Image (cartoon, helix red, strand yellow):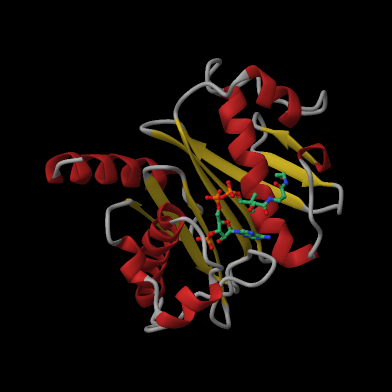
Length: 215
Ligand SMILES: CC(C)(COP(=O)(O)OP(=O)(O)OC[C@H]1O[C@@H](n2cnc3c(N)ncnc32)[C@H](O)[C@@H]1OP(=O)(O)O)[C@@H](O)C(=O)NCCC(=O)NCCS
């Protein structure tokens, strides 16, 4: 991707994400580029098991965003380690979430005083293949309000985002069948009894934010 295309892709997605982000959350995105693995701090690189270069690039891009967002909250030089469970480890008093597809990385962070858990997912704005939709959807899910062609993709991203928000709170591995999504109401519930709010955009990419507000 040439530099003007990178700028356009990032700017348009960022605008769409800002429009859906809950108050007090900070969000960002970055087109994944060659060399982004160099943005991993040494401790972060060490915490991420040896994997394909493309995955390390994506993790580096997501952490580059998150480092900038943490700096906005007054936290500099914090390493975001990957716990053995896969979950990112945030500095005290902060929660957040990371995601990447083949081309784009996204991140969200928030002070725990406002939001007790966050989850984010990013997906290409393309219909979800029917065989995957059959694995993801349950009869209890309500997605009729969503863009007809992208409803399955939004549902998929919503369940991944809800899982990322709920895991740090409940420490329970969930399957798609353990999460019920109501896109009409902007809500999801998990089998652990967790109620999670949802917000999403579909262009230029599908991004879903799942969040639990602090009472
Ligand atoms: C969390 C999970 C859904 C992420 O999906 P993915 O498509 O591989 O990757 P994404 O780009 O969307 O997200 C990757 C980020 O998720 C985060 N993540 C991984 N495990 C996590 C967990 N248990 N809790 C919270 N966040 C987690 C990490 O920050 C990771 O970024 P990193 O690799 O740079 O450190 C997947 O890794 C997983 O653990 N699946 C098992 C459970 C499952 O799939 N259930 C069905 C969905 S509800």
